[in-house]
Length: 148
Image 1 (cartoon, rainbow, N blue to C red):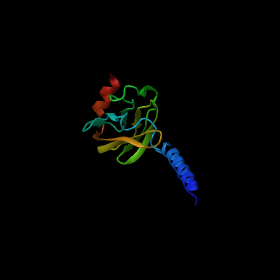
Image 2: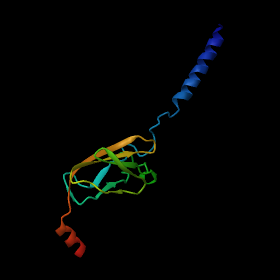
Image 3: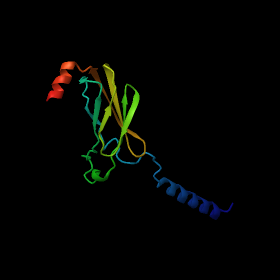
Image 4: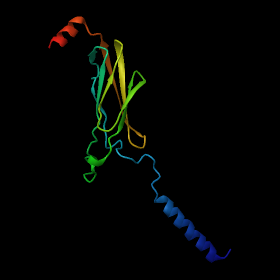
């Protein structure tokens, strides 16, 4: 091969390599990321007691403003999707501004709620577990709550 041909092939190879390196091939680049969001389960509380067979799961779905990057506008970021599990069984999904899920027919005893936050790319960005106890509603509790 002639030296000019080797030089031309080298230049072409470098150009293709530079173009490939400039591409964003990360499938988990959608916001929010682990740095923009912290999942908080507001209800039930850790170690708390729920009276009755209905459990309300309340989570905070707001995206945090980054303290390190004031240029980032988190107001336009989509809220994560939250998957809710009761004792490792899927009970529903919270999307957009919806932050409350009601679970009916929960048996008395110790339980665990797990909440899993995912961004639009499906990347898990946070996970929280809350352990709580469910007790049966007594007749006096039902009577006093219905009379008020």
